[in-house]
Image (cartoon, rainbow, N blue to C red; front, side, top):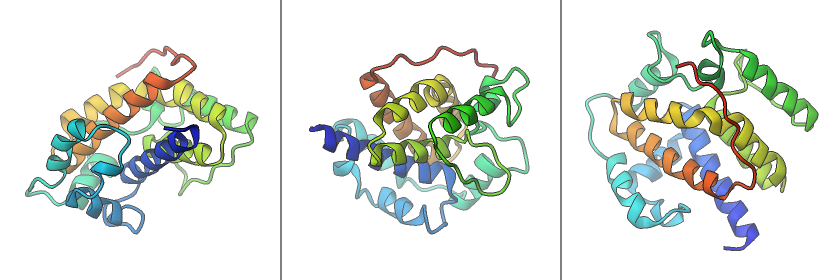
Length: 204
């Protein structure tokens, strides 16, 4: 793959994963992606081998008594405690709170790099899906250095633990498959990163 093709493949996978982790499955942003994944019309386009992806593709369309919107509500909204909260500071802050020190560090990094960020309502910027969408935007705009810093300093230090817990507690075949796809994809990104991933203490 050329550098341009690599960048396009990265942006594509980051944008798809980001949308599916951030938006409700019946939203205009995520619904077409859900349909494509459940129909299996994506494996040949994903920047990983079809052999690795085939079991995940089959899991996306597995039946389940719980609807996707119900699973989304349980995993990302509540009202009960989320089994694997998708915000970085919950994992990186000693008190496991939203808007923790790691969120403030991310905000500072974004200011220093002139990255504007529009959030829906009053929510932290370090949502797993949001960071993936930001990484896609950076790649699409040729800002590879900032994309690599975002991954190495603000996403990968906690995403492995988050995704492991997410897969273990997904309770729905679609979201378990989504978590596994994210695990494989982020591991592939990490294997090609030119800067080391920051070592940070995780508190859950």
